[in-house]
Length: 212
Image 1 (cartoon, helix red, strand yellow):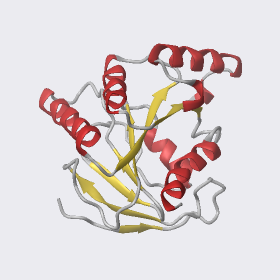
Image 2 (cartoon, helix red, strand yellow):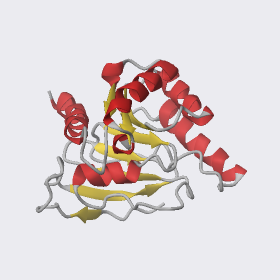
Image 3 (tube, helix red, strand yellow):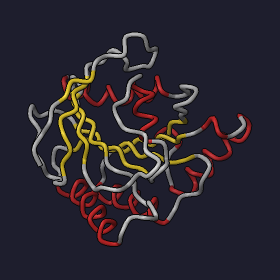
Image 4 (tube, rainbow, N blue to C red):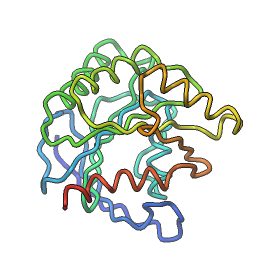
């Protein structure tokens, strides 16, 4: 698929943690092994449909990087965003009920190819909804990443949807269910900004580590 590089202007009036960071939308690709230039660290974003991935991305950058859709998961393409020191590889959401069997199979092939074959992949940001127990597909993709030994950071989204007193309980339950160390998990909310500063620093640290 041809590329359509597009500079996404800085959000100068925003207080989002990455509002002033220059971002280029490089393009959308069906090939998990597409080569990107210049070569830099890459972080893939993985999560179930309606987990709030687009809202989280837009909250981090204070501008619309990703389209927030009521009907996600329609097309298995990798949307690539170039930051100064790394790439974000935004995958479509999995688990969308109205997607055909062939599209689900194509999605699994895309994710498996990216995790198993993409030598330039530095790690993954996996998004989980704090309100829901892990689904079968959550476990499937979590196991796939673990098998490959890829570094993974987990962002637990929509923390604002639960009362403050319930958040730690749900966070601990998710960690137990998926055997995740708590220091690998970040509680977030795109609505209130909770956890976005720390998440932004974690992402930028990947690029900074490569430069050293």
